[in-house]
Length: 286
Image (cartoon, rainbow, N blue to C red; front, side, top):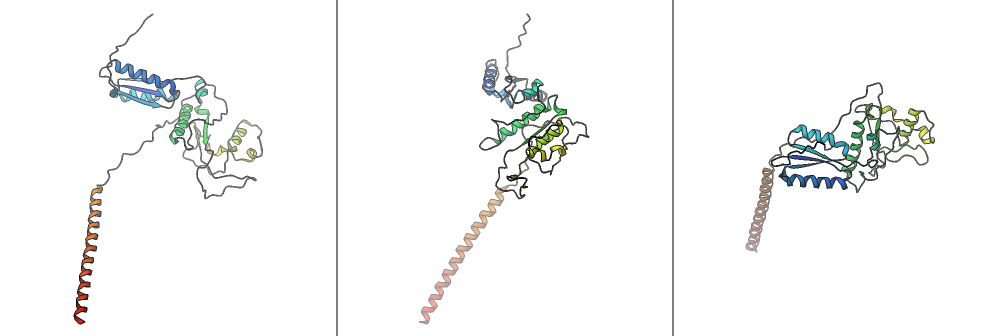
């Protein structure tokens, strides 16, 4: 058996740890062990960079970017994959069914949960789909279960005794989705069922989905499938513009206040003197 032992000297080296948030019970212990090993072999904590990603599926992409940046000497990816424990396990295993519905029980954008956690969860699923062999023959859509507000200027259509409620957003991600397109078709949650029924030529489940409009109008199957486009988890913001020096404004405000106060005091003094003179004239007349 051949054994290769590297140089266990981290003196002066910079290292990056890319760790998965998923299964954090295990990955956090891996982080502690890796950091401790780095320090015990001569490395300094300030030379250690920790990058967190949603799951193990994002580890290779982030590690590759860190390595390409050339700012660290080594990149270590840490993740824990437990079969069946991840929402996109079917994507990784190649066992994705023709239709899959997902209702998250953990990450959510609904109060009091963190909005960021829900957004990261959805993006992790989309990115896993884009990296899989299913991308060119799939569609990913998600909708919200409530409006979150108190008013909608568009009255809901009265389609039955119950009618619709306030409008909620729905988004579509697919290699065949129309680019930059906003579909003004009246849709509801059964519109997904309508699309599935039309696509696989199956009977509707009830009267509602039989009469619903399909989401087919949001697709363009005449175009070739577009390649996946990956976006960073953090929104890129423009560089902050130079702010004007507000001290000048504050000084002017202060000067105006002082001047106003002085003018008011002067007016009071002049008024008092006039009153005194008027009183003296009345006394002479008497």
